[in-house]
Amino acid sequence: MSFNIGLSGLYAANKQLDVTGNNIANAATTGFKASRAEFADIYSASKLGTGSKTIGSGVNLAAVSQNFGQGSVNNTGNLLDMGIQGSGFFVLSDNGSLSYTRAGTFKADKDGFVTSSDGTARLQGYGVDANGNIVNGVLTDLRIDTSNLAPKATGSVTSEINLNSSSDAIDQSKIPFDPNESTSYTKKFSTMVYDTQGNSHPMDQYMVKTGGNTWSTYTLIDGRNPDGTPVSGDGAVAPEPSTMTFDSAGGLTGVTQPDPVKDQLENTLVVSGWKPGAMINGKWDTNGAEAKPGGIVINMAKTTQYNTDSSRNPPTQDGYATGQINNLTIDGSGVMFANFSNNQSRAIGQISLASFTNEQGLQPVGGTAWKETYASGVAGYDAPKIGTLGAIQSNSLEDSNVNLTNELVDLIKAQSNYQANAKTISTQSTIMQTIIQMT
Picture 1 (cartoon, rainbow, N blue to C red):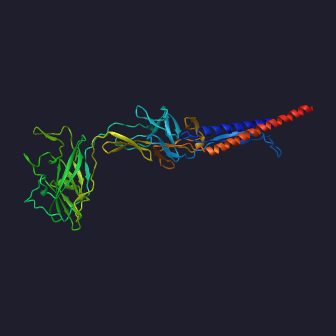
Picture 2 (cartoon, rainbow, N blue to C red):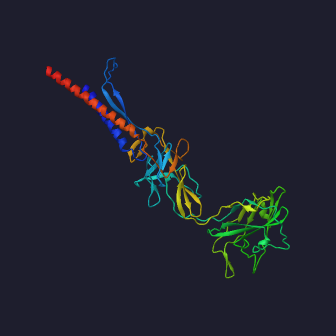
Picture 3 (tube, rainbow, N blue to C red):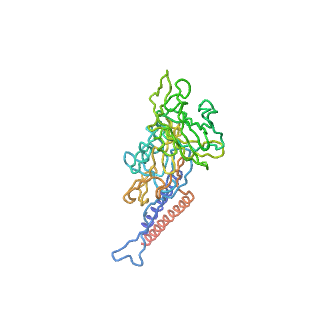
């Protein structure tokens, strides 16, 4: 019996050395989780119980558990390096076979798919619809779309303008509006707008103070009336102004336009009938480009008339030219954004994380990955930062959570245990030799 007890102790000490050695070997492995050998004593039992004088039969390896605690997340400077700050696992698919990992060493393959470092499995997440909205619920292979961003025609402009209440009024019966004569208007503001092909066009707004608390606004695009007719020279057509009125406190009270239908939108200017293009050989050529249907709606609700310089905060408008992809960014919630040369950005996917009821039930399969088992429970998928799931930290990797100091101490303890159990066997052998010599 003593030989068997000693042998079980040697086996246990050897397994402890194996586990400790594996932890030390993977101390620098990205996303690695340290393991721990857990042992249980062995007792022989009869049908009537063990009794009070039963001696144990040794030890066995009860389990090898893993410590899924957080490892330190350090910057690497590589965009597709990703660490999870908190709980959860990246989801990888190898032709439909799912595995789970904390090692975020990803790269893009020749087709743009985000894959594991060896290129055998693709990172899973949520795709986007035609409008760039994340489509939650269905996992898909994440892919970096490098195609150009199609242009968008301008449909709305928002301005925050102050018009100086102390400005002198201009008598338009004596000085009619002429964009080429600075004395015929009080202030000029320019905004770049876009047609359906992404061509840019300067839209100029000329503000003319015509009386107390009353201003006229002339809107020209490409130096012409919105319909393309010139405002000076041959065939000139005088532009029609809109009128803005203010109360005694400098607040906007209303905007009146030449077309009464346009007044249905409160405190706005509607530029309709715009024909993008140029005069070529005496004819107006749009080259196939058009304005957004419905025209451009200019929100003037935040216009004021205070006794300070006439000025405007940077306007915002919803149009843009064609964009070429410049770079990629990934935020904490795992959304991947493509950034374009036209200063626009578009979501191209979102990383999904998996969680398990019993992480200890996961089966290690190598490559710093695990597989789902019956003991782990079914994986639950969701976006990062939802519920208990952690946040994504791009340009970073999670280090192994192995504590080398503790492992080296455990190594000494396992070695001592091995020597002590070997001594048990050696002592039993000596006793057996003595008994044999006595017979």
